Image: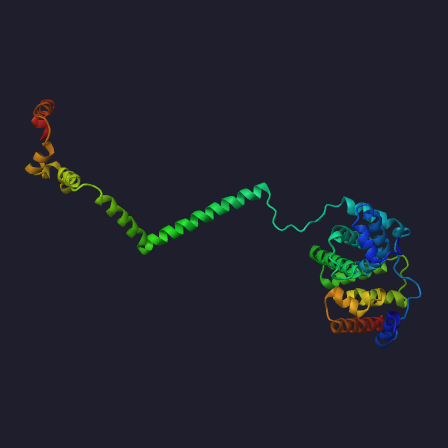
Amino acid sequence: MTRYTDQQLLFEFRDPSTKDAAFTALAKKYQEKIYWLARRMVVSHEDANDVAQNTFVRIWNGLEKFREDSQLYTWIYRIATNECLSFLEQQKRKSLASLSEQDQERAESVKADAHFDAQKLEWKLELAIQQLPERQRLVFILRYYQEMPYEQMSKLLETSEGALKASYHHAAKKIEQYILNH
Amino acid sequence: MEIKEEIQDELKRLIPELPLQQQQPTIQAPNGYFEQLPAQLLAIAKSAPEKRAVLFQLQPLQLKYYVAAAVTIGILFFSFYYFADLASGEGVDSINQWAKQEIKEVPAEHISLYTDQTSAFSLHATAAETENKDVALLIQGIQQEEIQRLLNDFPITEMQ
């Protein structure tokens, strides 16, 4: 079922007799991408799980009416990124901590991981990402971890490719600076 | 150029210190998480209430408020229109026009009779100021015996 194309999944989802199976196949196809995007944006597994669940509930509710103006892949990613940003926005409103303190809290969550090793470059990168502003963090994660082309990202975030390249460039320079200083 | 190579080339230029590909995964998901997730997601999605895009949905209680608001606004508009007319004089004029029309339909002799009989009261405030001709007008048409009965009931000294 996971070999099915997005078109086939969409077709089967619209048929009541194959709707559940199509949704399960769609979840299998996209769950890891959505989970890892959410995990790197919100850091904790529990929060990432909440974001992933909300994303798939929205997919379930909206897929039947999906107009195919954009690719299914782009639509799913758009829901996921919106859920991530909404989650972070809610956290900001709930928290009494300042923004820099919230960045610090996320970094502490990264350090709390059982496999954390401060000497390894990969972990320094994880910490550096948490220091980035939300939008730059999102662009960097989509590009570096999700290997998304700028053209696709442009459609997803409704931002020009030039602006995205500039954002990625700034993010990379901040990360480089962090790695050199730590 | 493949997207992977493109990203690696880009990173090589931007952050030479960074590994081009992660040697080992850093953050990990709990064991077995992705095997169970699709079934969980299906169960959650099917039980979650659908968030429909509501264009305009009125609850019964809300409907009452909207009706009350509409009636109030209607009264306010009517009042404003009516009193605005009065203030401009157009409302008064229309009432005057109506009154004139109605009065025209009353026969002249009825008007004359009415004004003649009431002139004593309209022109004079007290009985002391009432003139003899007014008294004559007042008692005009009253039977003699009725006047006599009145005088018997109320002696002239009391009336003065």
